Image (cartoon, rainbow, N blue to C red):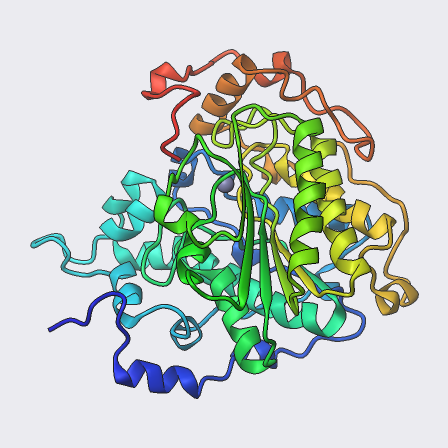
Length: 434
Ligand SMILES: [Zn+2]
């Protein structure tokens, strides 16, 4: 008989108690920033990724912007290894990991990937053979997951770390969902508990959505304090998981900068006065950006940069190690905003790497180019659909960070001649399914 999803076998428990972590073995040079990225993060398979409103090349674009800005190079970022099954078993059960590669799930449809299709919310994925899904979707997720695990270690050693990917906050030990297949935040914290023997951790989850994955994982765990500020009117509406949130701040659709940033300031301060963690995992989703059809909030690019600065200032001034993960954020300008935010943190000396700067690797104060490399342009079906939807929404492209040297494309430019409307695609801007 299969064990219950929530029950570990004796064997699993024993293995977990003896676990080491291969991500912790990676040697990081002093001339490397504690910024973690691999080109393996990016998802692309036969154009099907365009059927999801997720910009699946976001991570590569963030890295490119930081490279163009003179901050990073391939040899000055930390490259994670792919998380192995053994790494994942610290948190996930064998049964859950098996469910991701379910063969024979439907008689006669051997090795088709129905479970993963549910997690990624791209139904056509179910029509792909499992080995393609493993390679094109789950593999990038495993690299990003190990990036978050490694980020916890680097943050403890160096005071801060940023994983350019990760932040799969809808995934718990036994359940994936909302484009999240591995519980990277839970894994990062559990490894820090096990290997560094830290005693307390905090999750500051400022993605637009409720972080129900890590909340389910740390239910009734007093060693982990969760602050979650999220839009109450969108996915996932997980009432059970809400019970794990120590400081729950539910906001409504179209909350603006002024209100939002006051809440961030007050509640991050309040949380850190109430609880002194040995590690903060900061889930810095950018789907709070105005015009985001999934987050449905009204925060400007400048507001996102200020938010990240508030969180880093409060943790760094208290000497609390912080690892940031990039989580949700689906618009074409998201990558630039995340890159600008990282440049702002560096400009404000909230992050630094003296050895890298001294090694002459950096050209200070160079800002990203105004346009993406041609290879990153996305003119696919869903990209056109997104632009069409966004051009109909509020002034989503009109608030530009001061750090950005030019304005993004205008609504007029974004709406090209072959517009596809929301209703053409079967749902509306108010649809919360994602
Ligand atoms: Zn989100």
